[in-house]
Amino acid sequence: MRRVRDFEVYVAGVCVVLGVLLVAQFRTQQYIGRAQIPSRRLEDLSDMLRRSDAERSLLEKEVNALRKQLAVVGEGERANEALKLELGKARMAAGLVEVEGPGVVVTVDDSKRQAAPGESPELFLVHDEDILKIVNELFAAGAEAISINGQRVIATTEIRCAGPVVSVNNVRIGPPYEIVAIGEPATLDAALHMRDGILDTLRAWGIEAKVTRVTSVRVPAYKGSLYFQYAKPVREGAQK
Image (cartoon, rainbow, N blue to C red; front, side, top):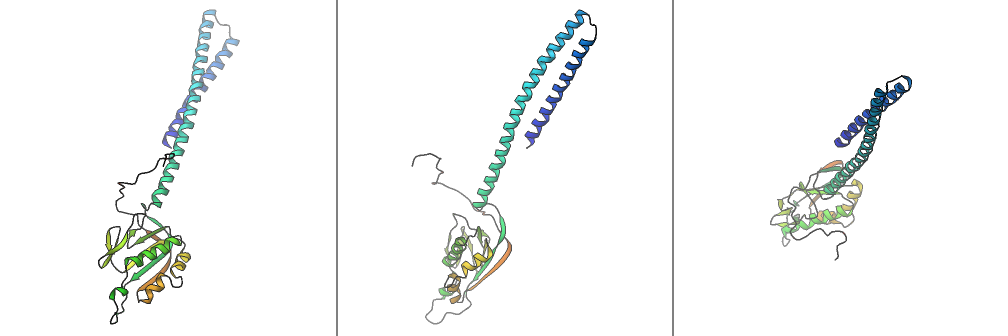
């Protein structure tokens, strides 16, 4: 808004000069009407009045032009602020900024139960598909932002097995897994505790799963790279 204020000061200055000229012209006309002035002096005063009229007309035009410019600059500043607001919303939706709000914290850890003879030990461990199911349930319940052990989940995030650990955003993380989600706490909690849902399945194998409702929690921004080699934006109106 700096440019708008500079224009306003300049317009005010021009208006002051215009006012001074009008007062001077009025007093000169009064003086001519009252005094007995020699013809030569009268001609000089008439010339001054004509010049004053011309300067006043120019200043009036300049004031009008400046007011129009001021309106244009004001519209530009407002458009710029609106653009910044939309950009901020887009960055938040893309997961590029840290956010905070109410939600839940889900802690999942491997089972301490020993596998019985003939049972696979893998059944008692937290796998990538378990974490993915939890994340999907949270998003389906209206979660607005999610992180897994500090890794922000965005559109390009992968959750996959990486040997004995899980890879998220190409970062290897191990148990216990802390999944933080921002959204309506009661709704998110209920979604995870549906009968025969993901948490019931995990607990059946002794896997520890705890959901805590919180009034305020932070989800960090995505720190990885964003590189698109093949996907390109489609211009509006372009033919398919």
